[in-house]
Length: 215
Image (cartoon, rainbow, N blue to C red; front, side):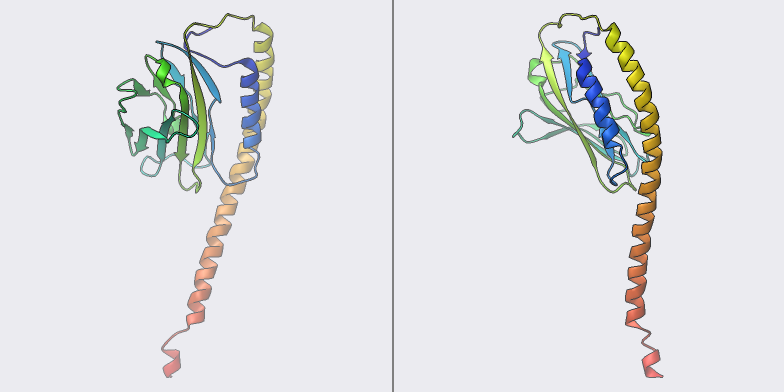
């Protein structure tokens, strides 16, 4: 078991199920995926994983990313990592230079690594992604728990076997749903664009040609 981060097996299964449900072709928003909770050992480095799916290729000039930190539920969010044509580390006093961007937006990965984790780093980390022509910004949150000692090891052989089987099935279903959703999303956006053009043309026709009234 890695000393850096742990995902409890039930949480892993629920994460997969949530991902599957979120990919159901029901809306036009982006999907951003991240584990709900990550446990990190005090003094180690931990990767806060955040990925997204999009029907469109990532273009650096249009793509945008915000990572924010929230100390408590009702606390304001602090921006510490941003992508606007390039990655920009806001160097919050809280984190100093301990934040390292380890993702790759062109591969739909916007994860980062927090080095030398401190007890004060506990809180909620919010990942916001926008990839035009997708019109809605996607969002996911991670609750980071900092541990002072490594939890006891457990025999997870059965869990790994079950997880691999379930994971393979989910991968196939997710792929199918992604294809269906992308087709529907692009079709809907084309219809919205056509409706807008028709409305604009109707307004133009209604105004008439000013020259015709003088003949």
